[in-house]
Image (cartoon, rainbow, N blue to C red; front, side, top):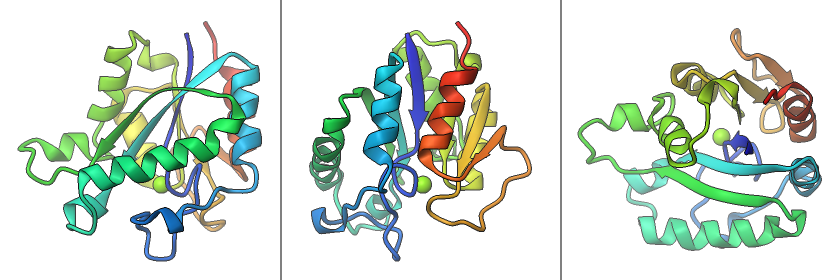
Length: 179
Ligand SMILES: [Mg+2]
């Protein structure tokens, strides 16, 4: 199974100025999000979303509200036709080993690989900041791909590829994934 692991906020949808997608009104797609996801679908890839949600830990939204908002995100992205296997979300402050689950901890990525019987060493994880790249490396991914869509000045010393936009990132994945 071909799978791309993707961050959500700042990668597939716009991170609002306060960095919290805590209302449906704050959902905004990047201009190439549908095209990029369609490109993955056309090349036989499914996606898994892996997202930290600090807004839950902060008490701004409940977990239930997150899933309601996320359902709307998925609905808006659905015209891409891409198959979404699952979304892994970390917003639980109470978990004793939370640091392992919250990116840059590797647990969400490792859990995704286990749940879908994927070889993590063949997978890329795309995100918009250094903690995403570190999560990819900590989990043993083939590489972390940095997208500059949310912040054009962002840099990473250990990203396997830095993509101007999500479409460039997914093209890299399609060209470099080996099975
Ligand atoms: Mg992000």
